Length: 398
Ligand SMILES: [Zn+2]
Image (cartoon, rainbow, N blue to C red; front, side):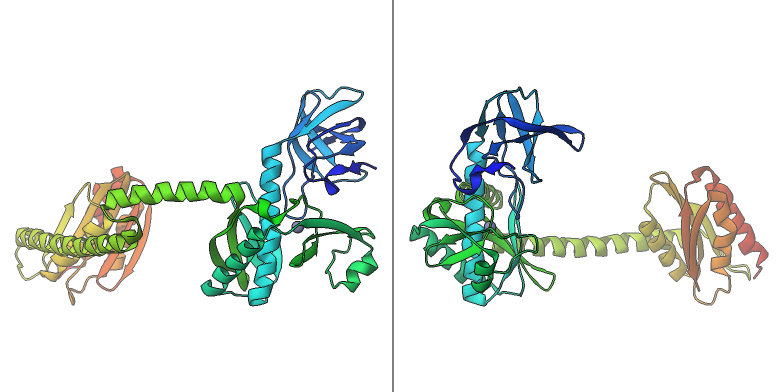
């Protein structure tokens, strides 16, 4: 069984060990050591990385009889110098202990319990078992940061399962009889196998980045220590850039964006009106070209390439509004579009006309009453499709 050095000292980064088993993990070589300071993934905290002799440790998986160190490179026999990556370990100490403090603060402030914790490469999250409002989030963040500022000592101790139960700790079923608990003196204590700082001050700062509703509770995204600082820098840079491009003071950028959005909405509206006006002009000119009524109905069968389907439909509707049956087709972006429309009471089976035309473009579509539209990939069949519709309309008579 491997001696787990990280349990007693989260600052131990260099140690000597020897290989007691050589295995594989998901097709990659892995070794078990007689002793290890490498934390294996577990309890929401990712694994450590580092080196065993000349080999690189790229993952550490918890297993029996001891953690599996997945390696790149040769691991020789004999006593080996091992080294845990310091920056990653420090980051994990800060995020994981920050999580303990923030989770405790949510219990104090909102009686919200943490049901899940994830320490990701980018994001750290906790899931709370109930909805908490923004004011409670701010108060919890303040309380957790007060505990950081008070620089409370952090200690670990071992309890038997019975002792842990008597303290009211909820334990997983496989917890065993040696329960490790981690506590910030006088504020929080909970079962945990992770790597923690000696003092709450090492967490630096705890910053809530955002919250969202999640499974009936709340997911809280946050960052601690150096991560929080880096996040501040990134956000400040982004905000400064935004402010520059909006020519607005940083804290007034939301109002500036709102004004911009309003302007875009006004322009969209004006553009839509202008487009409808232009199509109206075009439709009246087209309607004038249609054969004058000789006792029958006026029909205009026409192909318009390069116009999008919505535009073609609007044109057909406007032509129909001028009293002319529109049988329109067009090729656009490698597709054949068909739009048929008739004036109210013109008496044609418009969906039937579309049905006659669609096979020529290998397409699908439908409609009801006076309008039908569809399309397909077979652009070369477009002329034949329009001819079929036109013939069918002619056969339908006056
Ligand atoms: Zn923990």
